[in-house]
Image (cartoon, rainbow, N blue to C red; front, side, top):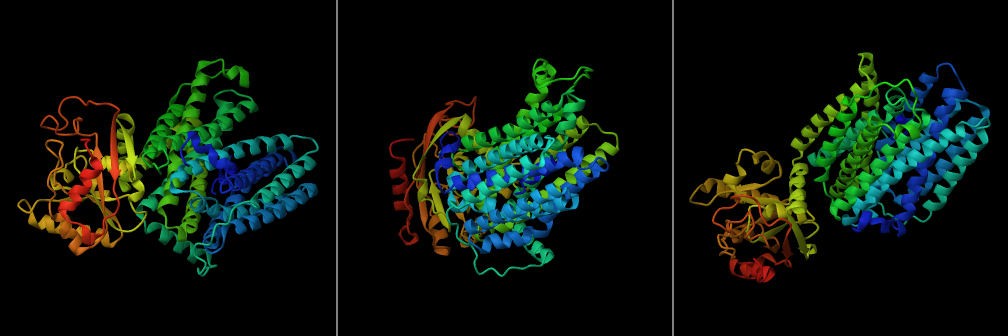
Length: 633
């Protein structure tokens, strides 16, 4: 099972965005990576079965675990070089070269099978790991070049679902073929056929230009490894996102590796029951991936990550703590669905894996979306190294737990509790995850939101967003719909509220106070705004200086003119309508009084065209915001 997981070290909206499958910019790539994962697992699982039952009888456990180490070793050795190569050269040509290498490796594998040579087969496994290490950075870094930003969630969902299903089907087929008395011919025909098919399909992958053709490649793996991890660590959000991805493979490796023994010891199932458990795990990941794409509605929605983390903890702990009575009578696939205790275990496993899909897809999409494209492949390479390391640690951790007398269920419970601790650690370091969760819940449980002309927000570069201020949730609404993160300027007393100060601080909010309250803080706020704009960030202000008391647009404060004097940048007028009269507005004198009302009310966010800084003054900016808002309040 560990071997299967190692393969993974490596969305217009519509239901699941299946239309991508029909498009040349995605379909050949998807089929190429699917066939590669499928073929890897046909060969690897066939080899595990052969090592266990046919080629040797003594020391089979040692050989199987040695095989896992041999496959994962190339990720440590070659990922730094692979990431550099993927950034330096055109990616579709690299994929085709890698697929030619795969065919050659499979030919050596066939020869090893005919010669019945364990050293040669283990050497082939090392070469397969090397090929996967070089393909991994391309696998994820090519997506942002062929997909729009609002397609990344859907594209990643399809890739993750397809890869897990490829692992499942490849593992099953490899086991079936290896069970034949005359196994050499069917295994050989299968692996050669699928590797050739992968090469043929890869011919149709569109060109993906080199992002850093002048890059000087460092062939020293230690020095190059330090360099890519230094780049990764330079962005806190990306670093902890990659850490979260690697933790998922620790979690997934732990559960997936133990499923066969869990089936035998707790469910008293035959080998086919173990296959059903693996199938449910893979199908659940696929379902979770597609659900994440559907719920994101085209946005890289990291607010789904805490939901996935919560599910992993709850359902993992349930599997670890549930009471499963021992039965002397063995179970088949048919009989296991007749007993409620077993059905509950299967449902828990399915919901756990669905949670995994909700957790992992936004993380990969976030790394692709946020990392500058010129070194995305190297960040993916660093991710692959950490993934491999975490999976090795997972195996060692499981062995230690068993040495201390823990059962498989105890291991599940321990890892589930560790997941809660890791999730809290990551979310404290990157509060955007929990803040986006709050925004997502607000926008999908209380309001229906209409988004208008958001493409007027520049994809990069500094700008000031200036919006009317209707309700306390205005920043959440704007943050939820914006295609880019931004820094909000907010009243210092709200910024310093005990329960939310930590999140506002880590989200980069800028506290401000009127001159009569705290002139020093006001000047500091202007300095922070100027610095953010010089760094190319978006800054959102509410130029009225406070919430509207009657729903109308109040006179704008002159602060925005002072900001533009220091740092001339474009100004994007915005308007929110529909929030006046809601629980979060001052419709009845005080906001958030009594019980929330106006559930599922339609609200709208309008975005105007960019105004050059030299043309901005409080009078014309107010006029532009009024035009956007219209008669709506």
